[in-house]
Image (cartoon, rainbow, N blue to C red; front, top):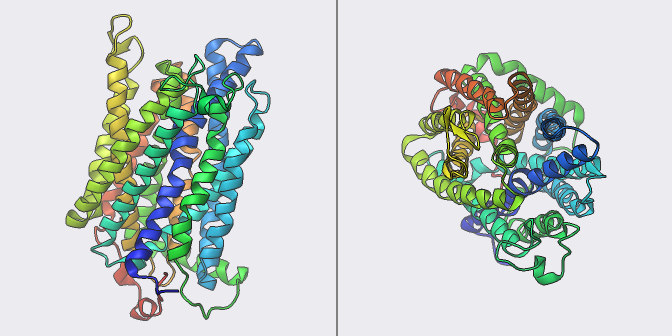
Length: 469
C-alpha cells in the first residue's frame, strides 16, 4: 500500500465534517427537530390541551432533551479527552462514537406518526447526538497537526465549508425525493421516493434518520482510509492517571488568564449560538407557521450561506487572526436575535403588517442566511482560537475542556428561552435571553489574547508532541 500523503490526510480529516454535518443540519435543526415538535404538539392537542399550551409543552420536551444530552456531553468530554491523551489513541474512540451516531440516527425510523413514542424518539436522537459530539472532540484535537499556526485557520474554515456543503446536499436530496409536504408530495411534486415510501405514515420524513446514518457510514470511509494515529509508546488507559492529568489542567487555569477567560467567553456565546440552531426551525414552525418542508428549504439557504461564509471566513482568519472574526460574528448574530425578538407573522418592530404579507418570510430567510453564515464562521474561528490556547502535549484533553465549556451550560439557553417565553407569553420574546449570552461572551473576549497562550507551555512539552496523524 502506498504511503498516505499529507494532503490526503487533510482531505480525509475534512470528510468528517462532510459525513457528520447532516446529523446537525437534518436531524437537530431543520427536519427532525421541527418534525418532533409538530408531532408532540399534535399529541398534546389530542390530549385536550389548548393550542399555545400544546406548543409550549412540545418545545419544553425538546428543550429538556437537549438539556440532558448537553450535560452528558459536557461533563463526559474532558474525561474522554484525558483518557485519549493518556494512551495517544484517538481512532478507536472515533470508531466507537461513530457507531453510536449510526445506531441512534438509524433508530429514528421507528418513530410512530401518531406521536405515541415521543420518549423513544428523544432517546434515539440523544444517543446518536452524544456519539457525534464526542467524536468531534477527537477530530478537533487532530487539527493542530495538520498545519502551522498560520494555516490552521484556513484549514478549519475550509473543513466547515466542506461540511456545510454536505449538509446542503443531504437536505436538498431529502426535500426533493423523500420528505412529504402536507399534501403528501415532495418539494418537486412526487410521491416520497417515487412511491416506495408511504406519505400517510410519514415515512418520507422518518427516513431522514436512516439516510443520515448511511450518509455518515459512507462518507467516513475516506477519513478512516487516510487518517491514522501515530504509533504510541504510552501505557494502556489508566483512568486514575487521566483524571489526575485533567485535575492538574483545571487547577492551572487560574494561572492562564487568556485560556480561562476564553473558555468562559466561548461557553456563553456558543451556548447562545446553539440556542439559535436548536430553536431556529421550531421558531419558524411555531411563530411563522412554516411546514416541515418550508423549514427544510430555510435550512438549505442557511447551510449554503454557512458553506460560503465559512470558506471566506477561513481566509479572513488566516489574514486577520481568529479573534477579530469571532467578535464580528457575535455582533452580527446579536443583530439577528434582535430582529427575531421583533418579528411575528402579523407585525415587525411593533408595526402591523397586511394579512398575507411576505415581509416576515423574507426577513426570516435573511436571518437564516446570517445565522448559518456567521454561525459557521464563528464555529470555525473559535476552533482556531482554541488551537492557539491548546496544550500541544495534550490536545484532546484541551479540546475536552473546550467541549465541556461548550456543553456544560447547554441547558442555560433552553432554560432561559423557556422562562422568558412563560413570563412574557411571547414566543418571539422567548429568544431574547440569547442577546444577553452573546453580549456577556463578547465582553469576556476583551481579556483573551489574540495569539493564545501557548508560550506558557514548556519547550519540553511541545517537543514531546508526536504528529497526531
